Length: 65
Image 1 (cartoon, one colour):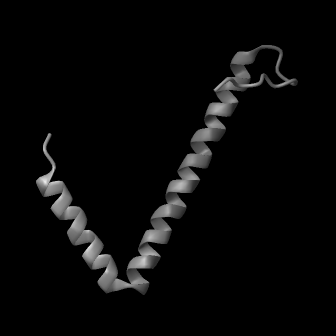
Image 2 (cartoon, one colour; image 1 turned 30 degrees about the vertical axis):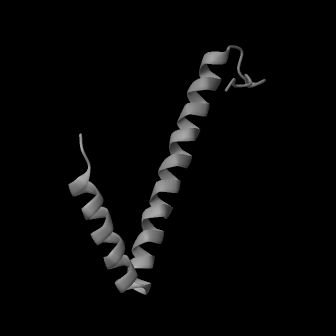
């Protein structure tokens, strides 16, 4: 995916650094919200969350490297 250089930046490199930093910031925010949603789901539906954890553990035990 090509990035469009920022008009305020004379060269493309600083714009790429800003875009990369922005992308990492958005990704970190997304992961925080995802973990928060998972924790909320575990509190609201403990049985279903427990079953999901057990399935995940079984998948990891039977996974071949």
